Length: 203
Image (spheres, rainbow, N blue to C red):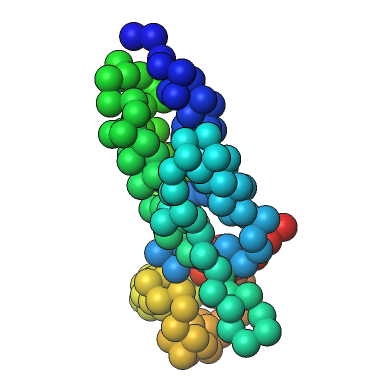
């Protein structure tokens, strides 16, 4: 079906928004944040152009960065993706409901984004399991099966509580008490877990 003049004005922005959603970073957890407006301001700029093209107001989908004193606050990645996905679906229902289903439709874009996130989580889980197995084998070779199981439980506690510094500290101390090889074997996992738990800052 041929686009109306109004749809022809809006479609480039509509496609642009879908591209932003596809390229949005996959959240490692619900608390991942953007600290710099350079990571999301282009969405607000696209909405300004959309308002101009349609003569309507879509500002409810803009990202609003609250301030904490003199410093700007942060924006959660999940909130950014929620606003962006909501705007795409709103435009689809308002203007592009008669489009045939294709790889650029909002449901397909959101599904692809979710699939990418799930795949990344699966890959991260597999990598951690491999690292954990390698560490356990290394510790068992040095200290025996019982100590290896103990170390394995300690490392799993850290993996399960990446932001609980009390558990992390006590687990690390316990690993050191098992022996320096146990601590060294666990280091790659500790580094990965703590790095992924850290909030995302602007580049």
